[in-house]
Amino acid sequence: MDPFATLGLPRRYELDRGELEARYRELQKALHPDRHAGASASQRRMSLARAVEVNDAYRALKDDLRRAEALLSLYGGKAEPEGGAADPEFLMEVMELRESLGDAKAAGDLARVRQLADKVEAMRGAARTTLVERFGDGAADPEPVALAEASALVSRLKYFKRFLDEVSVIEEEALG
Amino acid sequence: MAYSKKVVDHYENPRNVGTLDKEDESVGTGLVGAPACGDVMRLQIRVNPETEVVEEAKFKTFGCGSAIASSSLVTEWVKGKTIDEAMALENSQIVEELNLPPVKIHCSVLAEDAIKSAIADFRKKQAARKGETGPAEGESANSAE
Image 1 (cartoon, each protein chain N blue to C red):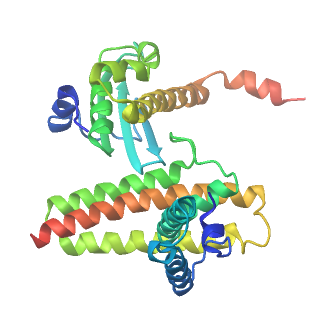
Image 2 (cartoon, chains in turn green, brown):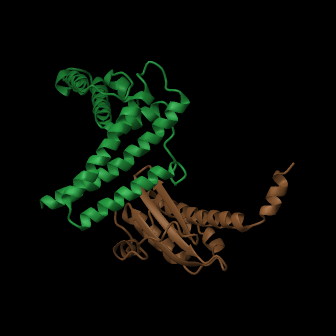
């Protein structure tokens, strides 16, 4: 399934949120069961299936990580294999960040937790900016080299997400 | 999904959590990651260069309970083994011991990768050391025309 095609949006990583919302609402309205009350059972089933598809596509595109994964799979890019060979320096950086976060949590140093989170958010922002370039504007498929880079960047987004999820847990616990 | 008793035990009382000096020549470090879920795992061994027996093993894992338990178990297993024996370790043994469900098998794969990469790191260091003090004459003879 191509969530971009489902919502009639260009196949690119950069997202116009206003446009996404508008297309989603438009399609939702058109597919609403009330509008098909007089239709045949098979037509109603079809519009229901289509509404489910539209919902899935909307959720996939709204999320920055899932949108990247959707693009990667549309272009046939492979997810990075497990293990350490891919990018040892990056893994080391993640390990150090996770250790610092663990130390800050143990020390109850919320300012430090936030500082680390800001750093990772900045790294995530940079990765997303590069992803926009690597995936291109949707007019042509990305070159294999760009796709391989995109695949590595999508992995990075997952490490960042994991880190920031942990930050959320720490900050929520601190709020009691 | 419920964790098995053994996973919970390793998760709550992880064995050998910690760090060894990665610059030490007798220490091998394996650092691996699971891009699918964003877990990172570091496993280190201190090996006696003469006997090649693993004398100490430490790990640090940021991940789910199964990933922590898998790495904790591996550090327990490899201690006292030679690196050749440790190299023969397979993830299926971890799966069996911890009763890991199919969705958590990748955690055991990660732990296997980590120990293998730690051993490879140790061997690389040893080879480099032998290279430094080794047959330098032979090398210079080869490079001479």
